[in-house]
Length: 278
Length: 121
Image (cartoon, each protein chain N blue to C red):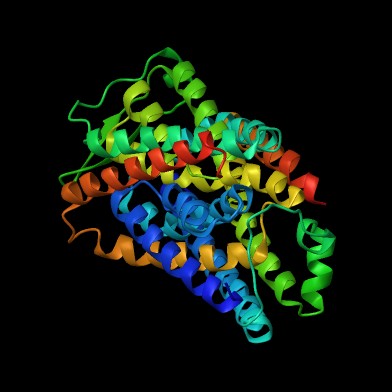
């Protein structure tokens, strides 16, 4: 393959991944890594390095839009980032010790979780809760707009949330993905924070988490400029367009289709990992 | 300064940082394509690149020579710096609000980030 062909193909795949990732809320990383490794035979270490920088680009790039809506909670985000960044450093260090085949298999399993999430995740209809003792002490509660008014909410089960967040960080560092789905589960399901607040705060946290593995990735050479360049530009461009059309799209149907695609990629990654082809 | 205003400023800053980073990456990319468009590539097996793409001083030096890979890496470094800046600004904001708990929380996150990024220096 010539440089030009490689760059154009990678850029096009990444644009599609960024677009679909933004529409479904799953992020571009979950598609970029399998696309690069399965379709183009790129070594998974280059793929996760390129994916990690694109994760930072979409998270930071969309931050302004999310802030305007008034859903994200900077205190919850910052507090939980202690756990995600620690997890990310551990995950990134582990990525160097784990063989390529095993990485592919773990990636496949993370994809299955993502697919499951995209089939199942519906905004929690549960009412906001009051903070428990620790949630109150940490002042994690806040308010968010509901039908023009601002409604109060609290946060519970902080320790469980921190534990899941450490796992989300480790997964992000190990696989170069945002692991937004796991972060949302920690806030929405475990800590009982409203779904909308959870998803936007998660987007804010993804970039900081990824930055914590970036130093390790860079020093190990996972971030290869000639691979990362088309991936970063493509995912960012696709995501910017994706967030613009989000309002008009039939998200539910799309999530189902995307879930099937991810499930297929998951099986492909695991089979290739097991047979040693990746 | 309240949380909403602080977050608004942070959001704008992050977007500006990302767009600048993307512009630098794109300029390095164009220069790379112009010079090497018909060379053969494959990335089937991993081999860590040299100092010029893996360390901060190496990247800065090669970007200063307008080397295409160095420029791309410089843009990516700037990109990696955007969330770090976000934490640093939040730290200052919490300190100004005299919110001791969240000043310490932000400082902790910043230290963990430094712990990772220091490896690339």
